[in-house]
Length: 300
Image 1 (tube, rainbow, N blue to C red):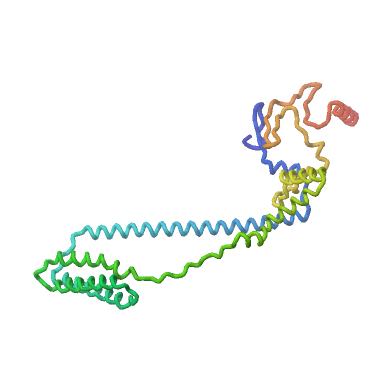
Image 2 (image 1 turned 90 degrees about the vertical axis):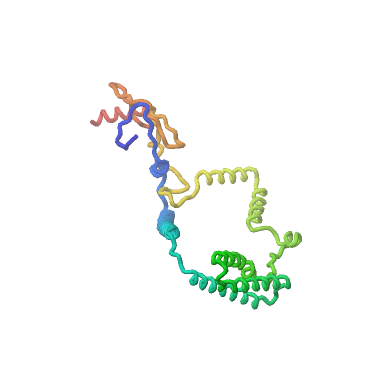
């Protein structure tokens, strides 16, 4: 059914929202329940506003991260382009000076590491001193013009790669691990059960003390509460109950096939309307309708 004013044809199916049906046929709320429903709607509105703000912040952060990644990709691309360009050849003397400075930095780092490590083992100390000696020997070859600059650079690269093995692997004393105190089985048995388990056992004990009829009524009440719960957010009174004097207006005409579970119906045929017979949607029988017709005939 596209819209409420649509004229139905035989075989058409239409559906109504269950909440609208319950609101139209259900009793009105009490003042206390109406106040609670308004309070819940205000709280829900605030929660929706806060949730929308958080989503907006998350989207802004995601966009910022995306922009950062794009900027980093552009920067990497520019670096690669610069690296692809042919480098201007520097003089051999400038290269030797630069390598000499880097060697001096390595020497300072190794000496500082050797001075700070007081609890170093003998083998470890011998290894670091041998590395320091090798570093000094390589530094002495930098000024030798007979040595090729490529050999000096390769030697420096190999020594620089070995540097983290000496300086970054410092000896850290092990801290005592914090052990979680474990309860013994005897302590666990004496500590008692949780609050939820105790409450369930208490309810079970009270339920067992009831008679058979009382247990049956309690089960029926629990089933009814599950099927028809209290919900102050609904626009009708909960638990749901029909409006007073509604029995005269709640009926299903013969030309409709209704499914109450999903609030849908199928329009089977048009109502009968011909001389002497008219299929009027009403909850009353034919005799009552004939008496009402006669009553209207006398007073028209």
